[in-house]
Length: 208
Image (cartoon, rainbow, N blue to C red; front, side, top):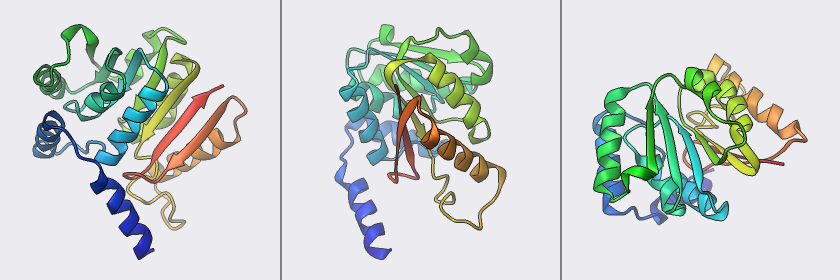
């Protein structure tokens, strides 16, 4: 296991973030926001690039770390980002501006995702990224799959939840919810899914 942990650390250290991401990450830490790790961010960028994404929706804005990574792989895409913390979104707006992202490429929606998502158009997004209240992750994924076009990919951060999902003795509601989600998606003929241990788990689900 020690060798595996060394490999995971190497994978994280392999990624060098640009100045805008470094600044956004520092701000995120100051505010106590658990932003995606550098390696997870790089995977987001690879997936939006491979998907040739033009329309992305993000559940959980933070201060814009994940949003910058998503747009790194899809420089012409439009990002819609939902968060109930208005102060965080104001910080994210500044993050995107300072990174040189045109204002017309980012749409920030302040509100509870569980209320906003039902109003979004079905099959309209190439990529859906979920990084919000873990207790609602199953509902977010259900909405995300509805919003995805066929061939689009849904991404869920923290899918191994603090590295506790793999530990049988851990049985709290959040861990149980992630386990149920992983099992259901693995058995679904409507999607193809993969689980990466990067960060504390990135679930990748492509809609067939």
